[in-house]
Length: 278
Image (cartoon, rainbow, N blue to C red; front, side, top):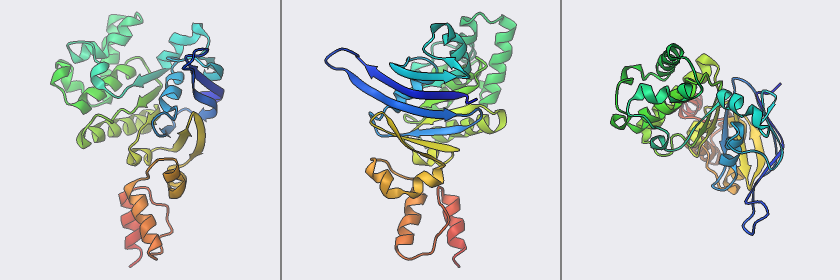
């Protein structure tokens, strides 16, 4: 059984009104436990709307979204689903509510009635997981953007989350902050088996995932491994999307006659391929 499954999932905003808008149109997909999946698409493609279905922030207008077999459209499942699937949004300042880091991370567990000693245990484990334990007594406003986003991730982990849904988590960060967050997410996926669903417009981030989903106008139009998706550069351009810089450079070098046959998604692979040409 898939960890998350969408069956003909559709979502309509303002249904029945003059400004009715169909944001999702018949989405079918499966995400398996422990996967690292990236969702790509231009603004308005429906990727954030889809992400909000994964932890039942939105319910389907038609079709189903299932989390470990639990229907997100059934209200009695909401808290169980949100305990399994945590969300991290674009602006970390909008997610931090406490004056001290450890209080912020412990807010969710406290809200669901976890015992104080259990809260302390989960907060410590979550802060260790994102390499932020030394900052547990800091005021969040003293932290960098990347550190704040790692605290937001810790807040989700403290709920014993099995899946992280990240909606443009690095969009407002500088390169250092982006690297901090993505390295943390990779480590959680690889070492702890946390399922990761990342929405991003940074193609180098997408290249790190196991699978890429591409959306356009509320539909899932492409799906595959990063090297498969990014090799079709012309198709990506038609969708209004870029590819990793290394992929595009390899493509241009091929056009110039260099016999690069290996699928290139990152700088290291490009250097290796060029060295083999000697």
